[in-house]
Length: 554
Image (tube, rainbow, N blue to C red; front, side):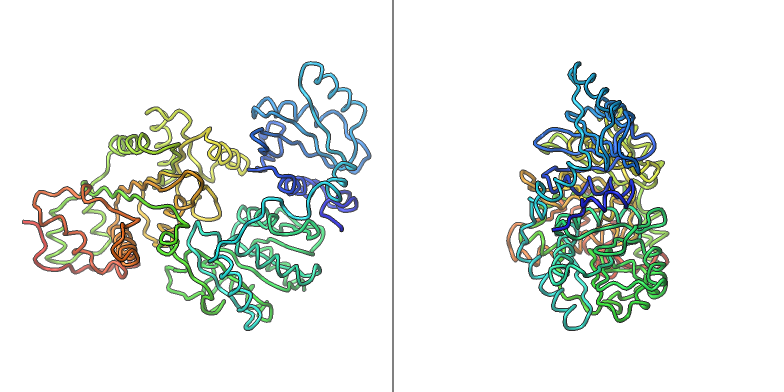
């Protein structure tokens, strides 16, 4: 069986392909948490990975020659020290030359061992050592198997399929299984996976490696990355896909991840129009769009839907302990709003008093002390705010707290994620970068310090804490609310869970202790005041609100 590590591919596809092929190989060999750290300031390392509790660092060196010099050995030696790695490997499509071997031997005399994975070793890995598929296979949950079956049925019968699956329930797993079965029909198939950012297509290509046999080649297509061959699986930005299709290339299936980015007009629309006769499969956790466009017009009605409520009810999402802090409310504004009506913009600006950072940190410290192996994300208003809060957290005792944003290079983001997952960095601050395509199952504390006008963004960010893992039973959410629509969204979710539970203990709670008012009857004010939660949470900024009479505190 030809593998993605065949000798001819190693020789002709260049340095980027060698690096990604090595990354893919590590998954086949049973490595975990493989991170691509290649880039400016990488300190000589291209890949970091874990295997049996040991951290490995890899330096990838592609050349048109027959041998490499000792440069890669120097680099990976420095990277081993910088990243605190236990093992160091030079990967090359050639062979180590005399200088490389001599330096490696000198390092070994002082206890530093550098291994070489050269061309013969890689070819042998690809043909004999690495299993055909990644050894840790996904065992589909019942709902995932049903989603895969319904998607295949929709594609076979109508050439259209849309799956809506809440964050944390594994929509990428469903996509991987549908794509794997497409290649099982014929190894010559061509599948195009489209997403809206370069980072996301890289994540999707890596995710698909766990589903595909090693005979299926994969590649990325973006402004900075042009594959040398256009077969197998192509993961592309929408711009790259448009260019490819306009040149006459045609896939046998197009898959759109985060399909809520498909609008009535735009690049996704033009791409899908140009592939009208090609079967299409869309996936999203959040189908709602601010402009009201129905993505079902492009993919057909959803063939399978499972939301947060169903995921919690079936035990596939973590239970939620939701603490909403509304004690910083100017109740005189409630009276004015109830008497005359205010727009949402005016109401938010006047109703919610600024929350002091010190009180936020105090509440976070209390939550931290009550959670086993705490790992937290703090969602902030802006990148500057995220960096400021990270600094305050470090001053308050979380010495390795860090801000995660697109101000960091991709390498630094990957490194921070690796350290976040293994606990070296236990708390990160962020704005929107965690919304899509980031898997952080260890998170068990979420803190909202920002307004989320979008229901989609709120649900995506809440979903960051809902992924389950061994030993994690629930996620603690600290919501320092500053938008009446978020109260509405939360109450709507709570009511849905209460209906689903049918008298059982609710999995989502907003403790009444957090609603502290001067008169007993005010305890139910918020629930009654924004009773039509489903309508309010998607309301426009300029909508004037009318509230029930007789509920205003006196």
